[in-house]
Length: 384
Ligand SMILES: [Ca+2]
Ligand SMILES: [Ca+2]
Image: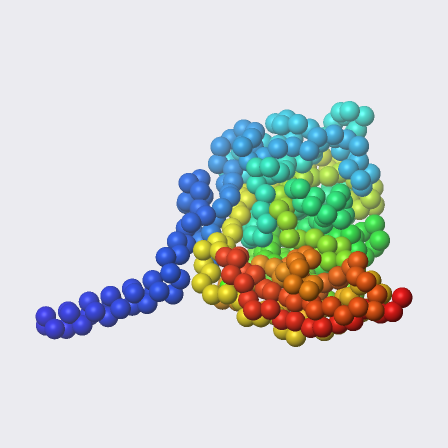
C-alpha cells in the first residue's frame, strides 16, 4: 500500500513537473486586473478589461468617454451625440442602454450617445465580446466598432477601422462586419465586409465578438465565425503595407446608436419608432500574454520571392516563419542595415540606386523579442 501511494505521488509529481515545464513559469493570469478577476480565461486569452454594467446610473467614467456633437460624423447622420446625459446613456438592471430620442438639440432633431473607451481601453490585438440587443425601426444605425487610438498611419481611413458589427433598421435581422483601410474603404466602395442573418437580433441578446491577432481579424456571432480578414501579398503588390493592413497599432472600442445617415437613413427615418435603444449586457476584452508564453525563437522566414523591381525599389514577399507562440514582426535589412519592419510577409524597399546589387535579409521576431536566423537574397535594381 505504501509503495502504491509512493508511486501515485510520484506520478502526480511527475505530471506536475511536466505541466510546469510546458510553459516555464508562465502565469496564465498575469494580465488580469482585479475588476475582471470574476471572469475565467478562454484558453490562453486572459480577461484584461471588462464592464458588466452592474451599477445603475451613468456609465463608469473610468471606462467610457463620449464623442459629442451633431455635425453628421462623416455620414450625414441626423443625431446629436450628448455628453454623459442619462437620457441617452444609462445603466439599469445590469444593462447599458444607449437611447435615441426624438428630441431637438444643437440643430439636430434627435439625440443619442456614442461611448468610446479611448485612452481608457486601448488594445493592440485581443479578443472582444459584446453581448447586445439591437434597436428596431427604419432609420436606426447602431454599431459596435473600433478606431485607432494614435492614428499611426494618419487620419481616417489611413489607420483603419474595424466594424465588429453594424445594423441598419430598415434591413432587420442582418448583421454586417467590415474593415476599412486606406486602400479598402467605403469611400472607394472597396471596403471588405461580410453579413450574417440573425433574425432575433432585435429580440434577444447575442454575443458579437472579434478575435484579432497579428495578420488576422475574425468576427463571430454567438461563437460562430462569419468574417475573416487577412493580408494577401499577391494582390497587394502595388499597395503600401499600411494601406492594406493598418491593424498593428492600438484600437479602442466604440458603442453608438446613430440615426439616419448615408447608410442608416438610406430609406428615411420613421419618426414613430422613438425612443429606441441599443442594450449591452457586458463588454469583455481578453488578451494573450504572448511574450510570457514564449520559449523559443521563430524559424527563419521562407524563401524570398522578388515581385517587382525598378531603378530605385525592390518589392518582395516570403512565406511566414513558424513560432512556438506567434511571430510579432519581420525586420528587413539591406546590406546588413535595418530599413524597416512589418507584421506582414511582403515589403517594398525604396530609395535604392539603379543597376546596383543589394543583399536583402529578413529576420522574424517574436513577442519575447527572440530572433530567427536570417533569410537572404541578392537582387539587382533595374537600369535607369
Ligand atoms: Ca451586465
Ligand atoms: Ca517564440
